[in-house]
Picture 1 (cartoon, helix red, strand yellow):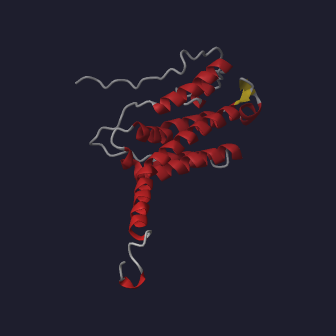
Picture 2 (picture 1 turned 45 degrees about the horizontal axis):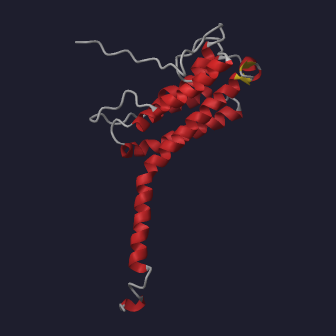
Picture 3 (picture 1 turned 180 degrees about the horizontal axis):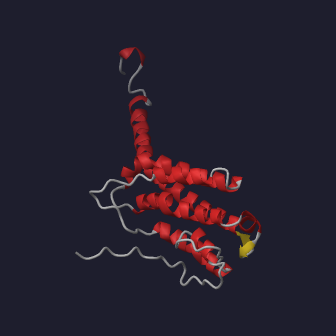
Length: 210
């Protein structure tokens, strides 16, 4: 039996230069590769990392087979929230809460996205990989270093993480709109039906018709 293919590593915007021992945390914050201890990217590599994550969220990778039910990543969100409780600034907490809430709102409606959907895959990966890896890399850094020292393009690691969480939040908002669309369309269609039936004097009070 042939061994399963190794999960590919996505390159963001070309090659990401790791020029010093400070390069890995921002790679991890970009959500593209596993975190490397005590490392930071250059400004150019940081921009490439943000762009790469946006592209990664748009692409369809490892689709769910049609006969396999969508994965429920709620446990990953629970573990992340427990790990970061009382350990992150309010700006990070609020952003993680927003992403986690949107993911949880999407999960019961995942079937509407269809089997093998790129959007469904992005939801699962956000909960199980993109979000935990970004926050985990930040938590491994000393607080003063993460929150005060500029590491790339004048941004601190805290600011970089905020950028990543905002990107994830925007993508999850898009998916949430998509999963709600069918019910919205049904509601609008039903409103048109009611308007046609009752809004033009088709029925009158007293049970008589014109």
